[in-house]
Figure 1 (cartoon, rainbow, N blue to C red):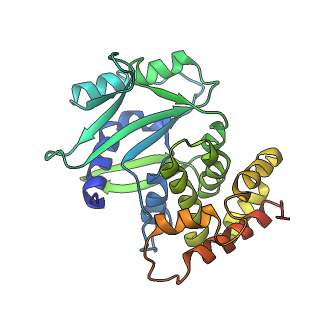
Figure 2 (figure 1 turned 45 degrees about the vertical axis):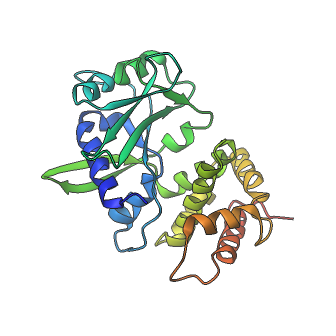
Length: 272
């Protein structure tokens, strides 16, 4: 099992190396719940299972990115490794960072919405880095919050992240599109984690109720329905496996089932 402390060192190395570009990026992947606990909720000691990828969302601002060079050029100079994504072709690539012993690695991935201009992406990233364009991705990029990561090695970072309700809602809409069953399970686990540990659950529910996305709400519940129709449904089992042994909940499957039923009610679509 990968040591979370070693992963965190690599994470902050990536953040430091990309500090010039952070105003144009939103952290969107599995590191987000981990940062919620540590820097937003703060008083919680139950950390979520995290990931060995760092996923950044790219949103198109009203102005051209004011950067000294594209991200690919910067990371190449810093001798980041590259994962080649097409057989026999040098590009596109996904940057990789390894520790000195090559025991721990983080892959950096970039995601954007279909409508973001290619010229904007290339100005920020270069044309060598692979960018995944996903439908409905604009939802998680709206209304991002700035998370103060405090001082790490003498440097303070402000990182754009989605607020918890949007992170949860976007996972509910998109998890079914995952081809990798392991990643699908992690998405459901992250939804469960936020439902279980958000310190102000009524605030979370009020934010979800206020979302003016009625079609997407219906879609979210339709996606989740088959995974949480009963305690023994696939989604409950996936969450139990991702969660692992629990010191606080005797029956994680039952707990997950009850929390997702409550989520359906919050989204104002009741199960039959």
